[in-house]
Length: 189
Image (cartoon, rainbow, N blue to C red; front, side, top):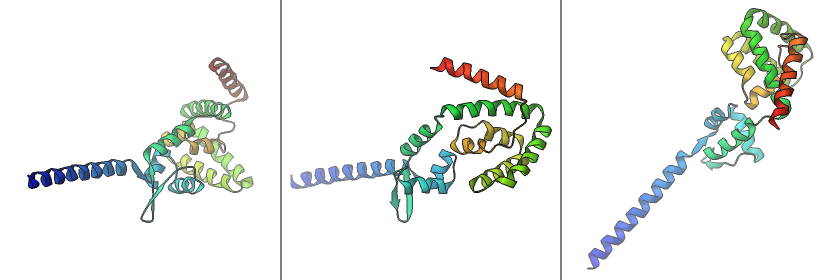
């Protein structure tokens, strides 16, 4: 009888240990490296580290490495994908610019390169790195440039604030896009 009882206790301990191991495996699968989180957020790994250090993204330390929960990263991504009114306006203009680029890639690229030259003369700080990014995009396949122009990601929103595509749309086209956007926005509320 004692052996049967001991066997049952051992079986229960084994089941409990297996359950703990399975829970640990599930928790580990839910944890991401800062590099994996950066890919989900479409940002740099350093930006994720900065978010952790500022307390904007909870993390655990495994050895000397940070690990973040997938749910926390997805929540942050969803929060940052919501656009302000000004950002929605900027995105509408960017879609119109993208349409003009598709119609005349060489002309738009040439104008953007001239604008970049002028912008570099007065740019300081972070703006310089955005101009470097635009220069890289202007040398990349057109699809990369169009994706950056029309993305809702935080990185691309900042990139659009330093756009070298001034003048791609005529004043009349710009006014028409903004009038359409205002009409659309008034129907949203």
